[in-house]
Length: 268
Image (cartoon, rainbow, N blue to C red; front, side):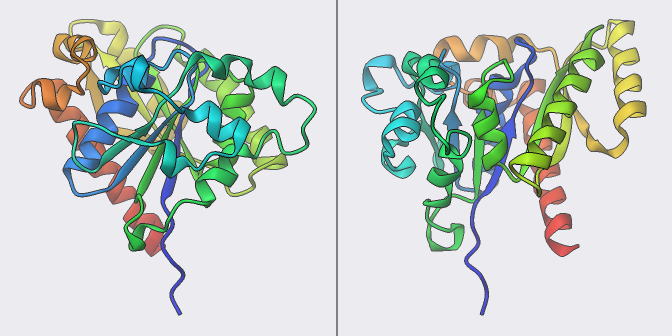
């Protein structure tokens, strides 16, 4: 008898801020939904930018991921529908910033999110096919919860001088989580963001990261694009704000590349 197909859980993690992590969570989630997947974004960043970027104002966040982690609220019950069909978000509030202190003594402190995600309906019973976890820009207990719950890590990496320096620290953390909390965790891929073709440094970073990480780097590169930067201020993913811009097209390509990798993994 076939096992029910549970959602695939990808944590978007990078301890550096400003690398396009939340932008990637919002727009990759939208692109996956556009190609037929049912997607839940879990906002684990106390700043709640993924929630704001999908048009969820702070007054609407009656319950949040804090309630899921602290009070055992059901993730499906906290999730809110967005303007994008098939895309929901479990929003974040500033309460999350106290999470680490509040659960410091609890034995299950690293597994709160995993427990909540495991309680979701299987994909083939009308549940989500993908869960994308937007992590805060630090390697704290919230990020550890995301890594303990995830099937794989998706790393947004900005095309800038210190990109590789931050990456090696993140890879060490992934290895630690793998050896202690989640033995099946893997790096799904690295997505290069904010690529500027007028800048020689961007090309050098792309070459260096591909040499260092090989086929773990996605073929799709996300360009620096004004429309991508403008969209969150309208509470919209860039695919709703301007479908034809280069940023939107890049995220659609990334979504199909991720689905192809998933199919290859499933068939292996």
